[in-house]
Image (cartoon, rainbow, N blue to C red):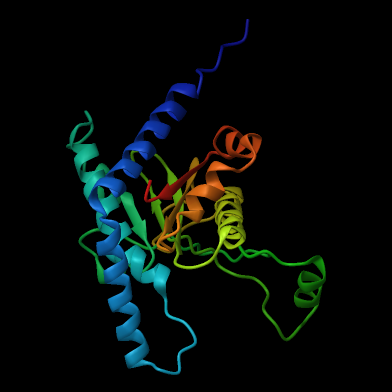
Length: 247
């Protein structure tokens, strides 16, 4: 009689609870008005500094100021409660990879970007557009994958951040589709890949962190009204945890 493989469900359930706890930490730590005021100040500063710039890097700044520090503190608190807390590989800083980590080396240990280039990007594109780039000898259509953050412990999670600052329900739906698709893209990359700091590209789960700063709550409305089968498939079929904040 063949040996029965242990069920992965307990691990998945632990991962779900861990990500739910992270969502609650975000909710309890970030005050919506403070977030929006901080982001407004940043945008005003950037437009004053570079008046001809068409747009500002809202998501990058939002991730650096709010997302990364909160994940780091949550990881620190969570890992301290675990039986393996005293082992160096499970330190909160070691466990966290983040884009732009060189500006906060005390919180993250490296970049989650991939070293190997991929034939597809995380962005939607038409077949015609892909054909045009692939058969263009003067253009390098291969790209590295750059998620916004990743965790190597206690669960292997790759993450994408979205900062939704304006738009109606249709724009909110499009933002969620883009974010979920990008998480799906990251999860689909081969485990033989490596990150920029040499650690393996090895993720069991993906997390979309979508923050609604529009003031009209349409991002949460879009997620609430999505087809229940799609919502179920995100976690149960694709291992993608979607958190829409504030909630």
